[in-house]
Image (tube, rainbow, N blue to C red; front, side):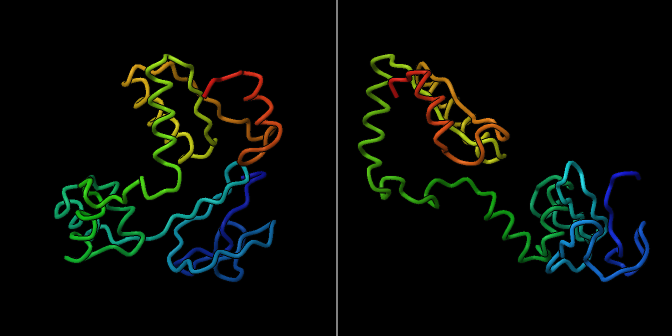
Length: 185
């Protein structure tokens, strides 16, 4: 494919689209894939590296059935080395949403003051602006927090910086843009 960098050698040792080379390398940028044993295909999409590892289909089926998860999720676990009876127990434990296993958030310094301030803002119907990040965990966290605050009756909105304009994290530019919105909290 024109303009697309691809694997030079696949994990099974066969040549990739661009011919043989050292295992785990791809053309163009000199980047080396470390600790990748079974690479099915490496594709560059919008300058992002996607690595697909080989996995045991039967083990994925066993894990899905034993742990009560979808086959797709089982493939992810198996491709990361989770398998066997121990793997089934690991997955069940990993996905268990028992609140007793979570850390106490009030161990974080200042959490009691933060909670008090947020609850006061909710009670007084002050606007609350949630600042997030554009990566997957940042957007997910913003979504969860907004949903929760809205369920309390909060007047809530969000700000997710533009990756190209604002860069990563809280920057002076993004802080200035938030300040222009004049959120009480």
